[in-house]
Length: 205
Image (tube, rainbow, N blue to C red; front, side, top):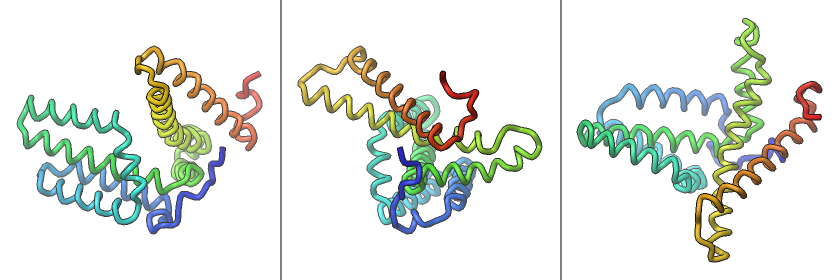
């Protein structure tokens, strides 16, 4: 497993990871500070336009993340029903813009870059005795890496069912998903051990 594989060569790929994370943080604050559907619609349109221009694979990955999109739609729909349609629309635009930009950031940044950036940001916490910066960076980087891996594995299992003409049932999905996820976790552990990141006492016997 290669953590340093180049993410691409577009303008967003060449931006420093710290800058992209800073923009993501600023966008998070902005969208939750705004309550105007028009203003949030403008922001969502800008995020969508940026993704279309500079990173279309991120848009495809976002659209393929149907559990996330379904959750956003259900929450927005319930909010519209429980409160009013405008509040539901505000929530829909807010979460959609934020999740799309977050997908763009993760698509245009390698896991190695994420780990290095988060480790550097966590150095002050290490100095005051709150955690280990390298462990924090590694943990967050692996979470970011592993979530898309599970989604990809799920789609592969669904496609395998359809190719064989099998009916999709939870029981037939869970077993290959669990086995595949455990194998993926084992591959990640081996990659960590190969780089001598984990201490000897943390490795399995």
